[in-house]
Image 1 (cartoon, rainbow, N blue to C red):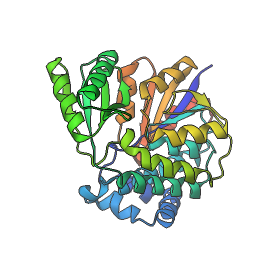
Image 2 (cartoon, rainbow, N blue to C red):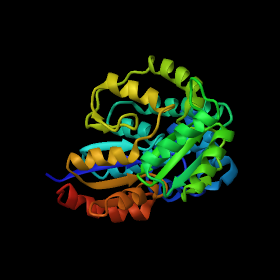
Image 3 (tube, rainbow, N blue to C red):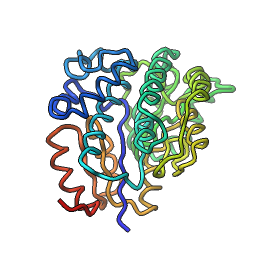
Image 4 (cartoon, rainbow, N blue to C red):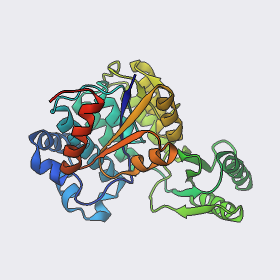
Length: 320
């Protein structure tokens, strides 16, 4: 049976002007932006529509604005009568958006959790990240182990693989000296390393303090069982059970994002259509590179919403 997955982007997808057309054209979008502004206490519309880029790309602002745009687009799609997808998943921050769509979290809780998560991650110890290309997973894992040994890492590693985006497109994260040394080793092994302009070492042990506080805060949040399976970053496995979802959401902050493994899980479950909902097309491009035989749609503005809606009616077998 033909199955559909909705996927939601994380940091790195933002751009000045995102969400503007959706906001202008749909009341459902206006309602979402107002709600996110109320519960995040941030000028979401100004940041999304006017920037400046320097403000928009700060973690404190980025996560909340991407959430607002992704939720707004989803609510507009939902208002057109589309049913729940067969699966949902999200990349890092996007996982929280997927939990709202799956019915695990109510609007207020998901907004406040993202606001908390963004503050915690924004205040974490200084670190950095680098994109690694042209090195196979096993080889990079060996280089990471070697670098940690050279840097004298004892308990917590000083550099880790943070994002498994594609088998040949990985992100490492950690202390600046260790990431810089690893990047040099990658180049020595004929790979490519690009230092990323980020203020934190996301999905690494430098997020341990954020993890502890976030995990504790989740105890006060009312999670519900998911209405459709959620494939989470922590283990790339599908679940609907609220306690498992809560555990994996907490651990995601200082653990790797198993993205291509998550896509593989959904492919193995029979997903043939992926719909990226939110700003940019990062996830669309990753899926197309990973498997060019599946259908992948991207909705990030009013124009793409209209175009994809017609395609989805056929996928969901809906009649006009």
